[in-house]
Image (cartoon, rainbow, N blue to C red; front, side):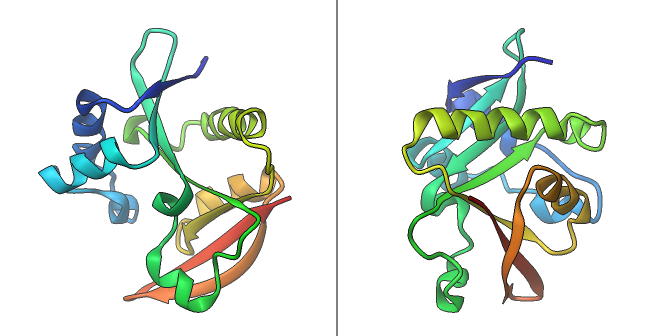
Length: 156
């Protein structure tokens, strides 16, 4: 599968906000509302499509990729590009994650001068953590938001 980055549009934003993941990944489900559409359109979010222009996933850069309470734990020091990402629910767990995230990392290396990358993942999401570790990320700081434990992971 080939991947291409596109500007986030309202069409893509609505599709993403309608995605529904099965438990325990339903933690990542979002509500379709004006506020969430506005965030996807006005913040640093991008759509990822395949060669047929079908939406595969999305990613965001910067503070949009951070869990705000992590700032209180010192989880977001300078010197890193924060990335958040998601993949269409029907495509998860099918072996596309490695090539998908590798593509995003390559894009970041080619687009930004600082190549140190950081992401934040829910600790229960062991499937994603294994992928990130396979791609060279190391666990750094854990913090709690409500009842969810998050881990920051870095790749230098």
